[in-house]
Image 1 (cartoon, rainbow, N blue to C red):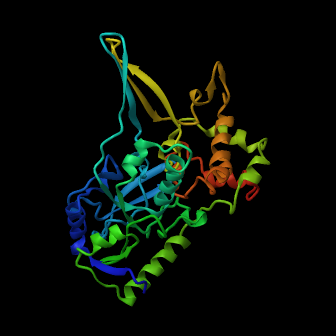
Image 2 (cartoon, rainbow, N blue to C red; image 1 turned 45 degrees about the horizontal axis):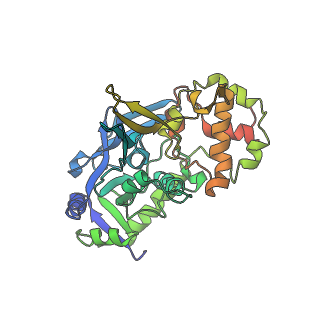
Length: 371
């Protein structure tokens, strides 16, 4: 048994929320909303998706009620990762106002954010968050808007015991068990949760909980559940850095075959927990005295994203899909030291025509024959 492993009975789950709120955190957690599981404000453990599971397939996501009403984390993920929590879909960056004397005044619009605890974070999404940390905080310029939301974020991870058919985190090394980046990790068992602590902040919260020693049976049950979750994943990415095989196959005929199916809608980039493309624009009030400069999520699948002074660099879907895949699976290694894919499978589930990134990469990289 690991030193920081303890056990929390299911009936005491509310105590975790109470301790977080007493520590000054607002809480969000997974809930059923609009036919999916997504994060929303969480006050009571009863709000969690008890007795709910899901099925996912290329282009398909369905929730189902189960007879096992004692579990609230028996599902893999919804369309939402941590991305919209730390990287707002649209936000004002700064404002400008013209005074009566004609001078201009500028002010930034960095959000005032309260400490936030996120319950139920999946390991693949923690990996994605750390990629975003590299992009927004560890390059030459730190993004103050991202920093403001990130710095007081407490993560309660949940190890994934019910991966979806579209999941492949085991092949990317990002799941199904969280190994870094969390404050507290839970693994759901029949009557409670194995609790692991990974930060001093998490330890302070757990000190207020009615924790019990984790028995050998509990830890063995968790090990078995993690192995089963990894073994159940049927999809995988080709191993290693794919920059070489992808860039060696820029003229592969399969790019055209994928483009014939792709709608260039950008769903894959919207649900991807690591995509960070955005555009910026100004919105001027009708009085002409005030303007707001905002940024909002964008996608490399739009024509406008590659528009440069009278020229669209990637006018065809073939070029946009190739740009997305070669960047995410290839040149991200140069930028961030790893692939931009964490194996969550959302791009497969939420693609309207069911394009499967793992299958397309395997064909282009030579791991699988073209159909």
